[in-house]
Length: 352
Image (tube, rainbow, N blue to C red):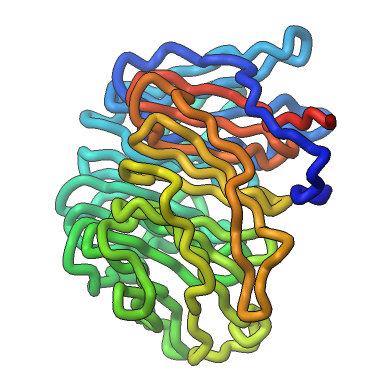
């Protein structure tokens, strides 16, 4: 659909509010193997209440219900959760310095592995596309890469040092084994494995290369994987582009280049950004708002520009910590907040 069709008016409809967590909700993740023709969508959420909750939509009522509470494993805030691409395993990262791996065994979630090694709070966890590698990052300034072994064993393959402050997020490229990390040190780092099996930083994106001037909180890729969007404490979103074919051919010299800065839309820290399959960028911030951006039809020759599609003020009563598009249904979004709730939304069109 053409988002630049002047006859279309978008609105964000709240479908349901999911309550149950007793502290702020830090993160959520849609199970990528659900929400198809024969399965109902499933979401995991994690909180300062030390628990992870599993939510499922009823086929009958279309209402979301909490199906499981994963507790008594983490002893502090659970900061991040993410499903493996097959949807079989859930990884949860905690301030207790561990990452737990959960498996759904006959409807009952069991902790099948605990990854230890970080000195303090683990902030984020990410699976690669083939499910053979897991990355974690921490306030201890390091990024760890874990090799997924048979029998739910995880072996540390590399400890990546380079960030000078707390690392906020790790994110694998959607099609290649290239890892991205962003930090309180205001930079984004790109990591790749060399011919000898050693991981090293192949690019640091800082303020001198049109990067952010304050903490970088999150990273997301478009469907093709040739563009990346980042968000920051500097109140901006930045879009980056790379020659994806060059990267696939193993060219280590391919660099991510700045193509656009979106500024003036949020007036407090932007904590989360997520790019949908059909090209809509959603952002969530400490101003309690969610905003949506699309590529502008009058993008210049020197690269695309982006425009505001819709803003939803007071999406939550407090900071919006995460926004995440559904992998199965177009224009369905989940958000989570310091107010302790998760909200399911639909970005709907009203044609005039």
